Image (tube, rainbow, N blue to C red; front, side):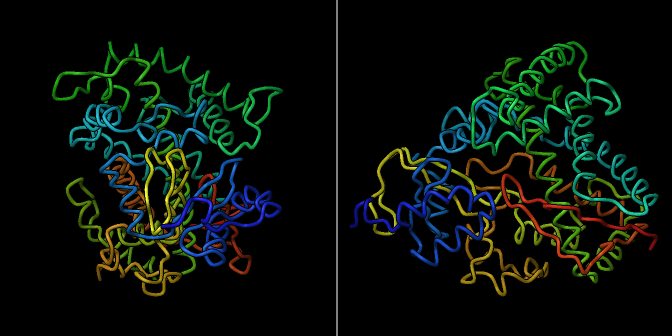
Length: 435
């Protein structure tokens, strides 16, 4: 067995630039390090020494975490602490299970039916709005639209209300602050604006939770107020506020990312628009029960998430001393799950850089249980993944009943940032026109 100090790494004068390289293009940086050093290597990001292991079996060990060898809470706290703490993603072991058992009641069929009706109305309005626009810079547009949906779906608020606008600004400031290199809340810095945004949301949501306890509606806050586990345990107001803040961030930001990536793929691979349109034409008044029959839409979305996962890597910290791929790794060591790397591993995927939704018909994603993980896996698998799938299917159904989409200038390459979420660097202008 080899010691931790024997894990290969760049010389110190090169590690000074690792954080900047990671921010610039995390998948490229991690792949270059893998090619240089092998499956196991060390790098230095945001001031931490990190062990990276590009191996699907090791990914499974970390995700399953059957012996509690890793901590999600310690992994995410560097990015989320002070801004999005105490969300479900940032909890471990029994603490995580306790919260998940209560929270899952907000994603059962009664709640899903309520979400379905709200998303359907929103999707139809979205398609009608796009039809009227000569062109649209899609990512900032869809970010606003998905945040408006989150305000309605999760909080039961009208996006035109003044309080909704203040909530939207707070969320934008909070998300931007997660990648701040200087994490001191002073001088109205990026991080300081994020901290102030969270304080504002706590103030607003405290009143909202009290209102929903008295007069519940069909929104996530109300469902969480009413949710209990099998022993009758409920969330406190403070716990509901933490979960709502985190869930809204995860829901609207990753969905905006995914939809932007999806639009890129189906404007680069135009024939898939006809396939989606043919499928949705069979469901003129789509019902909740018929969602499962939209297999083309589902596979297009799945393939988009494979090629361009909104979150490219998921951090963890080892709780215990472990031996992985011949190296002794001490407790306290930071690591990360390379979601992008698993999604593009040529050992399991045929032509991994090619956009091919039919690979899911062939079951290519079943070549290994841990090579397709856009929603994570194990105990921390995204609790809202079915809402995300429903939302995208309803949007595609609404748009392609009446429209087609093309890039305004297809000769201009669309460049993307990869962290904190995958999204266009500059303008991504689309034109939606009648079919």
